[in-house]
Image 1 (tube, one colour):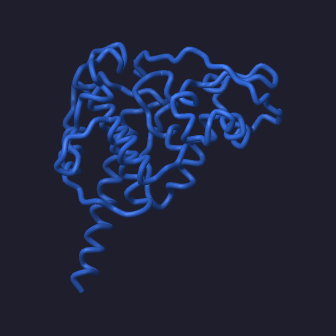
Image 2 (cartoon, helix red, strand yellow):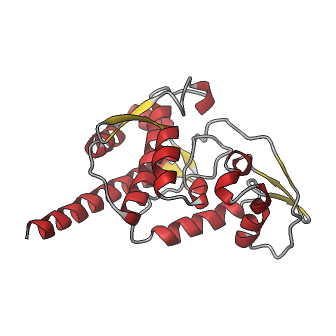
Image 3 (cartoon, one colour):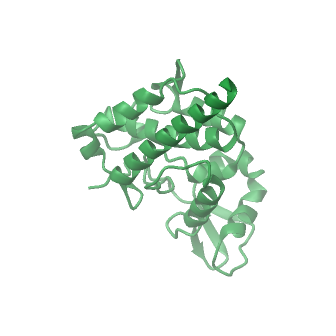
Length: 226
């Protein structure tokens, strides 16, 4: 009986947090851009959410994966808001590897949350299209929260959307210019020779891409809604 009660408590807690994440992203994200100015003026919703989930117990499977995705994106926004106005994440010293956030009783950096927690538990290259680093060069941030019940379809849909964004994958005939994300995280895609096969899998345009590709300059300016 206690086990069953704990299970229902877990589901209630997860559902509540997912709804709160969803309400926050829906309110403050539009067309992939974040209204940092509005959040700075009224940070209560974000601060309350992060305080509530600071000691949330570990979940399992897609519940944990969705939770960590939402948490990462919320931490990124929190990190920007705390230093706003700012031109971009790299203008904040140690934004990814020094600045820390409260996570289950420990202080973690964004890099630790992404690479040592999320990617280690759930090695999935598609995560690079749902985790957003507050720069315009990143994939566009979704205006919804990821949920366990819809997680696979959400991640798959977002990956396809990003790959077919002409500002993210820039095509000239069969030749592709791609984001440096495919260089920095090449191993996650199976190596540099697997980048084009990965892109080809999601590309809606009926074209056979050249196995050779180049990179365009990454835009580190803030993904800010003005």
